[in-house]
Image: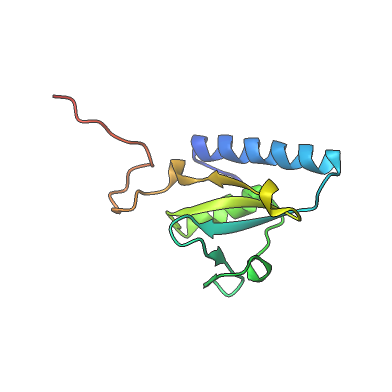
Length: 115
């Protein structure tokens, strides 16, 4: 799956590397899920939000999760690398290439007004 946005491509490379390193270490089983940063709910296979990790849609790759969230314009979502030990969970933002919450179409950058 090709990623067109350079920042999204960089994100996918970083998190893919993290997954490979984790799997190579063989320490904990990891699943890849999406979580809404504002509500704490997880994205489910029924394309709704749920409160339990066990009900969350599990993605085969970090790229798949990031691209799906990007394509569906889930602006307040983050990719979560969820481990058997919850304190080891790692949340990664994907907002670099998503429109901001106001729908202005910016790329997640914080534009500054020059006076």
